[in-house]
Amino acid sequence: MQTAPFDLPIHVRCASRNVVKIRSPKDAFDFLLSCPTQEGPLYESALEACFSALANKAHHADAYRGLLTFARAHGLLADGNGARSASRNLRVTLRTPAMPQPSQFRGH
Image (cartoon, rainbow, N blue to C red; front, side, top):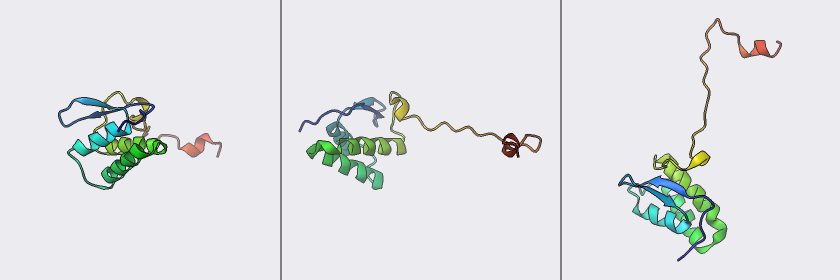
């Protein structure tokens, strides 16, 4: 069964450490079936979304998000996913008693 490709491929790292481009719900479905981690709600949700997308193109976005979420949660995303795979950059500042508190900057 041939399906339309995703707008952007998802780069995942397989058990053999090779990077594979997942370009369609069919590729995603095949990847999930060959994945060593085949349990849990993220796996089941991703597999179901990909299966649904094989029959109905309207579910492509669900399949994409499902695989992306599963791969991210299990550390399978490889370089090449661009901004979609980047974790949020958080700035953490340690405050000491000598540092001004945020309320001092707001004119309080």
